[in-house]
Image (cartoon, rainbow, N blue to C red; front, side, top):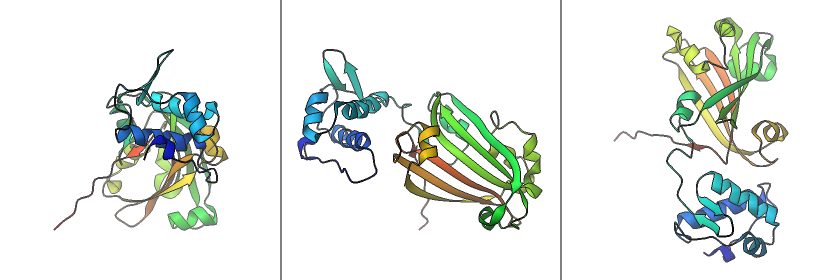
Length: 250
């Protein structure tokens, strides 16, 4: 299918620039535009899809940032190939390690940390009494000063009060918890869903309202069956990939 045969869905909450970015990347990856060739101009793409040039420009800018396109003044926009460390490949390991592998600089901003009452909703996940004290921690994490993910963690105060003495702008929650002998055999269950960016996502992750977000809902249970962490993570869908290895026994 050529670019002219593709269509944008104006009814979906997914932004038009992101739909266009996806279409262009698909055409590049399947060889419609080989490395070294030029893609149509902003005006031509704008005419094909009947959208503004600013929308086209945003889609091209993201692909250029990711290393798929190279814009040369007065010459056009050329197809390239991203370096291996351009995309962030995520797996279930500490954030600092994930980002460092890509050659980028990781950074964490601690936005909130407090001891609060669990309440009915969080208590149901942590399997504690609603009046129990819990630790609430909310962080934003970056790669080369680009916001990548927000992380909200809830931990039972009775089991995890020692973490309050740690600096989570410099330390990993995973690594701090793993220092406890009883945590070393912990089992984490994660549910992943695709969602649209809400107002908080748009502000904190610098994305448009309705942009794709990968939502992770995580529960960590230790050997004695206590839950030590309930986490909610929201990753930018345009700048994160996840690699999951599955072993299948015969």
